[in-house]
Image (cartoon, rainbow, N blue to C red; front, side):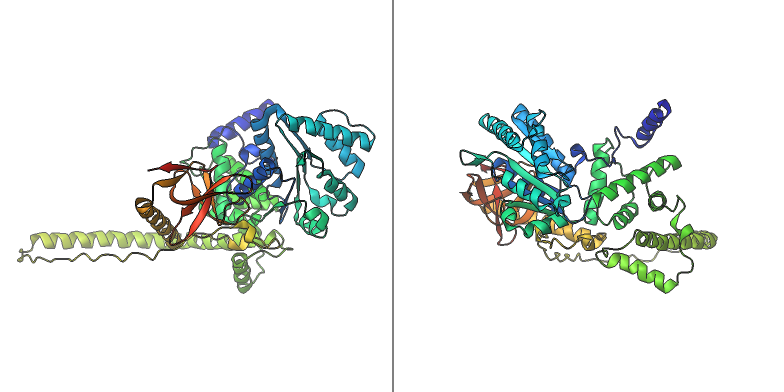
Length: 509
C-alpha cells in the first residue's frame, strides 16, 4: 500500500500535477464547460430559475458527459442555495413505479420511505412545499433514462410526478437524462414530450474540442498553462480512436500519460498513444506497425487510411480501423527515418562544400576591384487587404440528432488559422468603428463567455459566442417573458443580435 502511494506521488510530481487529470469517475469540478456543454449548462440553470418544470438531456452515444454536467449543476445549486436546496439523483432507474416514488421520497427527505405509495407521495409533496416556501429549489434527476424505454408504466408515473404544484407553480424541476433511444421513445409519447419544454442533445466532440478537453483537465490538475504535454499528432490519434467521445478520450489520455512516465519521456507523442491504444484493444503494448497485417495490399491500406478522414464513422466500426490508420503513419515514419540514415552523410558533405564555395566567393568579392556603386530604389507596394469573412455560426442544436460531429473534426491548416485571425481582427476593427460613431450606450461583456442570440430570449437561436471584455454598441433594449432585460447590439456588417443583461452591463461613454 505504501509503495503504491509513493509511486502515485512520483507520477504526479514527474508531470508537475497536483491530482490525477484523467480519472473516469464523473467529476463536476473537472468538467470543461465550453461549446455545447456551456449551452446545455445555461439551459439547465434557466429551467431551474424560471420554474419550467421538465428538462430532457440526451446524447448520441454513451460517454458524452451527461452525468458529469448534472453533477456540476448539483454542486452549483448547493453553493447557491445551501440548506434550502434539495435534490434526488436516481442513477439506476430499473425500478417499479412504487419503488421509484419511494426512492425519490427518501432522497428528498433524507428519511426511510414508507411501504405505501400514497404515504410517500404525501411526504414528498410536503417536503417540496417546505423548501419552496423558504425560497429554495428542488430538483429530481433521473439518469440513464434509456433503461426505461420498455418500462412505459414507470415513465407515466414520472410524467405525473412533474405535475406536483403549489400556488400554480411547479414544486420542482424534473430532469430526465439518457441516450438517443430515450429521445426517440419520448417523441412517441406526446403527453410526456410536451412536459419537457427545455431539451438538449449532445453530439461527439470535434477535434478542436478534444484538444481543449485534454488541455483543460491537465491545467485543472495543476499543470503550468505555458507547458504542453500532448503533441498535436498524439491528440489527433486520440480523437480518431475515440470518435469524439469524452470518456474514451480520458481513458486513452490516462494510459498515454502513464506510458510516458514509465518511459521517462517529457512529451506524449505517437509512441505513447500507440502503446495505449494497443493495450486497450487487447494487443499488448507493442507498437502498431509490429502487429499490423502484412498480408494487406498497399492499395487496401491507402483505402482504409482515406476512409478514416473521409467523414463520420459507421455505427458498427470496430477499434481496429484507428489502429490501421496509426500503423499506416508508423510505416511512413519508419521509412522517413531509414531514408534519413542513408542521406544524412550526403547532406552533411553538401553543406560543407556549400560553405567552402560561399567562403571562396566572399574572398573574391572582397579582394576584387570595387565597381561604381549603383543606387537601386525599391518601391514599396501596399499589400491588398485580405477579404473579410464572417465568423462561423456554431449551433449544436442545428445538428440532426441522428448525426455525429466526427465528420467535422479536422486539423486546422496554417492558412485557415491566419484567415481566422483576419476575421477576428476585422470584426473587432468594425465594432471599434461602430463604437466611435454610435450613441452613448455600450454593452460590456462581464462573463467568461456570452451568447449573442437572434431575438430576446434564452431559447432563441444563438448567433455567436463572445468573451469577457468585448464592447458592443446598444441599439435598443427589451424584456422577455420572464422579465429579463436584453440589449440589442450591433455586430459585424449590418447584422444585429441580442445579449442578456446577466452577462453584459450597459454603460455610458
